[in-house]
Image (cartoon, rainbow, N blue to C red; front, side, top):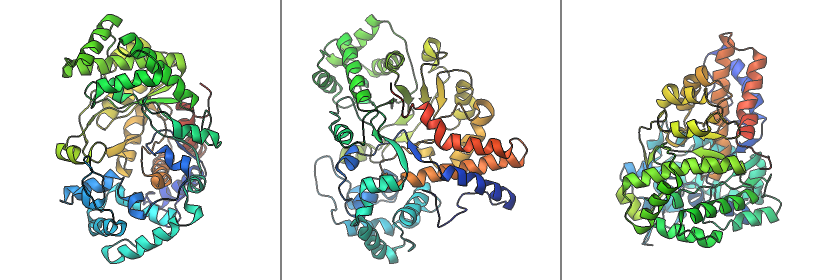
Length: 476
């Protein structure tokens, strides 16, 4: 869904470069959206109910927005964010919207402002600039749109020209929503909406109620997870169920990129200490690291593409976690080492082209020093797009500048939106396509690429590369 209200948004200011970038962007804008990694609730599309009020759609679930206001002393409860203990929060959508818009100036220069402005304009057709004086008028305009059939989730999915959307579920999920999508012709292998296997809550011993989650895994999979061998069998069984629901990828959100290849006896001893409650932090890290090797071996068997999302210190804001739980804006990036951390995995399987491991980072300094050289030297490794705190026009530009000279374009994996905010998906992809158009235009102007090469490359980056790398549309 190309942006029309500001046709030269994010394109180079130099007139010559801008003309080239316009041509390249036009090619990218024609491509359908491939969204191979994100966190949209599959129930949204399975049930296809009208969206709630503008605040519950746009503000309440978006931790990019609520965390900024928290930094200025606005409690998340005033923005409708649910509490862990069920204590009261604001439920009046209009009051939530007004409270948020009172802080709109805080977002000047941020990608959050860019995404929301473009969402209001391009998705909802609202041209009124957002401000405290216009808050009610904008709220009413969005609410009126949400009452129209054309703004139901499936209708928007088609208008956004999304070809495939991957959601993310844990092995404990019964995948009922994906079963409904498949029954409606929207899901299953090769479907429009597919799942992704995210096993963190049964792999990370430091996860809340880890032992209980392992027990539940056994019940869901029909395996005895009281033993390490049964635990692995249960994971394989669940991967089979996810593949049957359309999954082409697994996803691993570990604190670090550490990998470790233990023998079965050592791994079983770690697992048993975890179940007994005697494992320490070093044990938890070793077990997570070893499980990445186990998952790589499983991927060689079943074909799932591995995604590794390390580097976030989860729930750093302990008050926020205690009050509102996980995934509400309390996580902070940390420096992350890849070269030595990934060596056991790469020693074992890095040169096997049957394995695909897409590595992301929240530490952009590693792009040049470690990640681009690694992706440029191992058949199994690809670079994921700038993610989360790095998902901004500035870092997207720096990413291309940092990695292209070593890894080229074709050891990268295309753009991922990584969002829960369904209505922002086309906007985020549009931003990435515009940044790539500007970068490629510069290479043409410097006589480093021909116009034909740049034209082919931008379509690859926008569409063909993510389809190929993430095996979208393939039968595993």
